[in-house]
Length: 275
DNA sequence: ACTGGCTCCTGAGGGC
DNA sequence: TGCCCTCAGGAGCCAG
Image 1: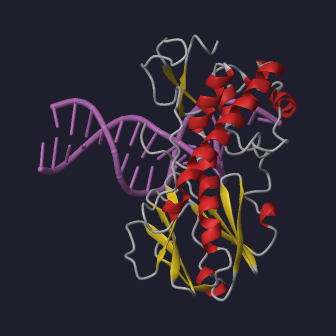
Image 2 (image 1 turned 135 degrees about the vertical axis):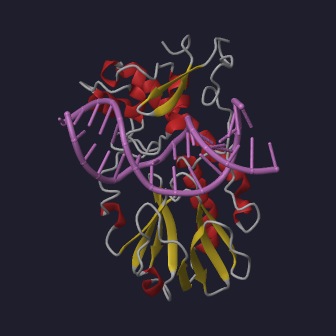
């Protein structure tokens, strides 16, 4: 298992780490070094942000919402994005694409080697933004439940794993946790979504919740790392049971973990535990 | 309405 | 040591 990409727990860990460090600060200057993220970084940022107070940081799906006095900066970390708070006289690192300098001499730097991430700006309700408005329920909210999954999945022929990763069904379940949750729920990832029972969906909901909550709890232990040290959020050390373990024995039954592709994504499962 | 496939990008890792 | 190839992936987008 290599470095983990930001899934929902990492984004929430980032939010919890960053918010207390930046809330209340006032922007002095914004520098865009490379606007070439998933979509161009809005070039009005250096004009509109200075002078504005950052009130809070919230999260919807894997988007971080930086609530300023007169607008919201919407940030997606993509595959390799991360945020670091540093002192503005410290050296910029390779792939530091956007810098938000505050009046107290600190700077929030957005680093993203693959540039799959995004920085968007809106002066309207961010939850109504084009990127957010169609999203499904938060996995840790009561709106994510077996009844909803069951209803949405009827007549769907798509495999349950890509179904679970569809942000219109539920947000924040990425490739790693999709495999892990299906393993814990004892559901074969290739099974058609429409053929899965309500009872099995109930197990899946519990598995998704448990895994995300454990990862958030584990990730939250090294929040101090946010201030100019490792430059990495506290990536959780939760034990992965199937992801990346092709050919290794299942931790439950000893059968060899299988790997396949579903929806162009690597998928790991135990044939014996997930029928 | 669904479904599968393509795309963006860089870095890691394997083979030779 | 170094080069080249393949793979990895979030999620928007599009064609069938």
